[in-house]
Image 1: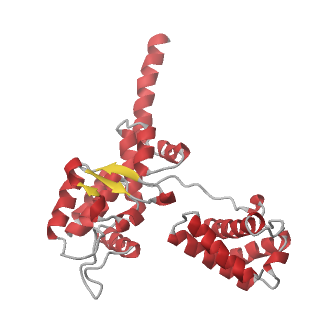
Image 2: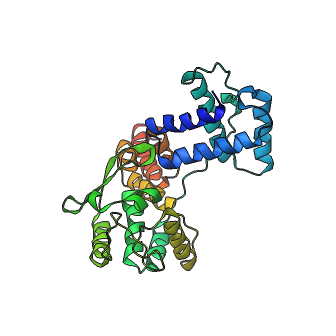
Length: 292
C-alpha cells in the first residue's frame, strides 16, 4: 500500500475517533511538512532522522510547545501504521524526545485592570463576548462557536458544546454577564446565522465573528486601556477570583472544563489572597496552642 493511501486512511481514522476539524487539519499539515522535509521513504525513518528533524525545527526558531505538537502528530501516524494498517514498523519518535516546557504561572488581571479594560469597551457585542470569558470562563474558541440554541437565559446558564477535548459542559451567567448579553441580543442584527456573535462592519457583516476577529478586538481594547491583556487572561482571572472567594477546586474544574484537577491546581500558586487568609487563620490556631 502506498504511503499516500495510508495518510488518507489516517485522516479518516482521526475523523472516526471524533477529533475536531482543527486538530485534524493541524495533524495533516504537520505530516505533510515532515514528508516533504524527508529525503527518504517515511517507512525507513529512524531515530537519528527524527532527531535531525527536531534540530531543523529548532533552527527555524519554533517554540518547544510547537515542536512537541509536531512530534505528537508524527508519533500518532506511526502508531496508526503499526496498529491499524498492520505495517510492522518501529516508531522512531520516542517519548523521550519531547522537549521540556516552561510552566509559567497563569496571569490574571487585578480588579483595577478589569475596570480600566471594560471602561473603554462601548460595543454591546464586545462587552458581552469578554464578559463571558471573565464571568463564565469561556475560551475564545468557545465564544466564537456559541450558538443561540445554547443559551438558556431563563435559567441564567448556557451550554458549551464540544469545547476543548470535545467535552460538553454547563456554565452559569452572573447578573452582570446576563445583563450585557441581554443588551447585545436586543440590538443583534437579524441574521440567519446560528452563532451568537456576528461581524458588525465590512463585507463580512452579519457573518459569525472568527476567533482571530475576537482576538483583534481584545488587542485593540487592551492598547486603548494601556494594558497588555489576552482573551485567555480573562479566563484565568475568573478562576483566580473564584478561588479567592473560597470556591471548591473541583467546582472551578467543572466550570472551566479541565480534564485533570492538576491543571486547575495551578491557580492555587497565584491565588495569594486565599493563601494569605488561610495562613493567618491557621497560624492563629497554632498560636493558641503554643503561646510563649
